[in-house]
Length: 269
Ligand SMILES: C[S@@+](CC[C@H](N)C(=O)[O-])C[C@H]1O[C@@H](n2cnc3c(N)ncnc32)[C@H](O)[C@@H]1O
Image (cartoon, rainbow, N blue to C red; front, side, top):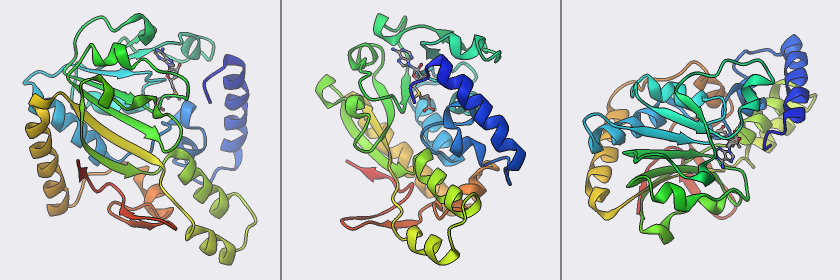
């Protein structure tokens, strides 16, 4: 998971092998999240929510993605916020695999501090044990994090003068991986697949934190986003078909043994 360079080489070989029998080019981002996608699953509505928040906070927003990896999510954000940047600790993930590093991704360690203040900082799925909340809290008034339920808890900012304003739930890459691997790349019977589907859960949590002065504008903006999403045919990325097919639709209900929730629905704290 945290990318050891030797692991990445192994993963790249496995990806090449997978491509020989893969039945959809959109599956790989959920099976090889670090190389081809992201650890948290997102739709275009997530990108639009986050960029709408940045624009509500500032006319010309500055945005930083901390630990952005190859920048799969960041490149979507840049379509809306052309000045968005990322910081990534490992230069090796680019150079040793011969991958292009765009200028908007700076190589640096967030533990050494973040150079300037940003209108919004995003931390997408940090591995367990990594904790640079002090540095992030010192560099912005608005933080959006995603974390895997029960895993990367070091992205909760209540103790740093921030309030949790809103949250929503999406699947993690692993939730989708399980569904598509069972359905398309295993010999499990359809009956068993249907049974297993009932056990599905979504494990990626999105939290929006801010200093008190931004609370109202954040709530107002997210309420507008939800309303807008409900009033039109929502914009989507092609790979979102995989989410629909796997039973993780927009506003789809997920029932587990102890709770029920609607995916992507925004909960205001
Ligand atoms: C689990 S990956 C997640 C990548 C991407 N955010 C995603 O969700 O798919 C975590 C990334 O954070 C980077 N990282 C870990 N510690 C870091 C630090 N102190 N400063 C900057 N990046 C860091 C790792 O090198 C890795 O690329």
